[in-house]
Length: 140
Image 1 (cartoon, one colour):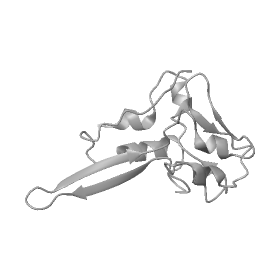
Image 2 (cartoon, rainbow, N blue to C red):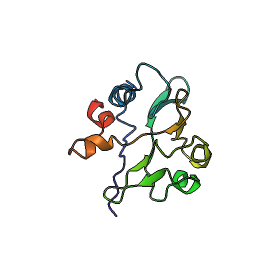
Image 3 (cartoon, rainbow, N blue to C red):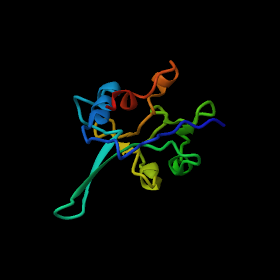
Image 4 (tube, rainbow, N blue to C red):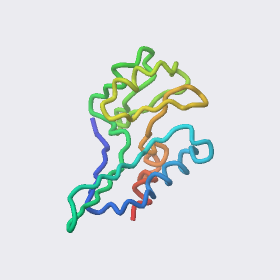
């Protein structure tokens, strides 16, 4: 089975958060702030005179064997065989949060308005058109 995935070079990340904003705009989570599919971590280390700051951007890893999918009691989560993208069917999701607890990366999130679970879709709608995810296209 083909598997799409992320390549993130933290040495090149400037911490601009453009990927997070692109994700919000692409997935219409900008105005209501109900859920974030991508998040950002700033890690400081070292000490004067050589302090160091690193940035990480994180989202669903679209795992080879998704723990979230195995934990879902209603089979609302599926892994596409065409590209390995893991998606949540909002019509089937009951919002039980089992997938949230099972994911070791914290990717599934509760939408505070719908009370259902959402996560990064790897911009499946863009990938189907031969485009890259919005976060990747925005990265400087």
